[in-house]
Image (cartoon, rainbow, N blue to C red; front, side):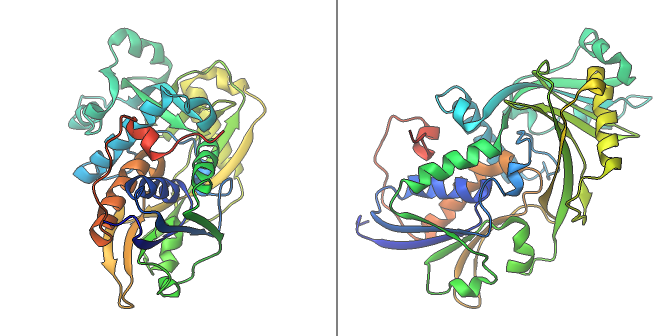
Length: 366
């Protein structure tokens, strides 16, 4: 494949899915000097949905019987873990966390309890173990519970995305355009391949009526004594989670389908504070709260990642519908997208390198 080959790729969307896809394509097409990679989005960080999220890695709200989900999550987990142990961690906001997952125990042990302790993603993570009776005793105030602990990561998207964008901006083959794309046909003859990473926008962009907003309200508080992540599933009160960040702790949350209300609601705030204080009672006195609302790009049929040749003759690779797992699946989905793109726009063998995988994908720009 000649390095003078001309390839034009447009990515629609600049959230965590769009920018990780862009970085992966630069890695795979490093030998193509005349690559034109254009990223078009109506919003960029700090105004994406992901900028509000706590960015915790866990395949949440997904079909864990789908091997693709586990593969995407596994690859992403390994990238983030490697980044935590690299020079990137501080500036990119990658935090390794000991993570406690707790669940109300049924009166009689059931298959639901067994399934909770054998979730399909657990073989992926480091340091997984079921909590013993002594450790469970620390949570007696929650009533009868079962639980496990694992090592995971929180990626502060509001720090991570700007670093990815800085990396992309220094490559002369990349261009950013702030614009709303109303129809894929508008991009006809402008690109050899269009990659649809439009998240919630896919509902109108490709008329996918199965895409719906899942409202999430969180509270950011000052609680510097909290150094681990906690998540509690209560049979009667739903789920609460506590996720440390570099400068605050995120309390959540809500998952309200078809709710587009951007205003923080007092009832939700009270519920979040109640269930999180139930996990760690000292949170009842936490001050300096900031309430935020974001919308997960939920899709009834889960993630759509596939190639389509439209009636207009456009080669489109769709990658949307990640719900609350955009961070969790990001690099894995980007890798899968790039593999599809390479079948449409062939590229020669890559030169061998001793760089770790995450450094091949992107690097800090001084």
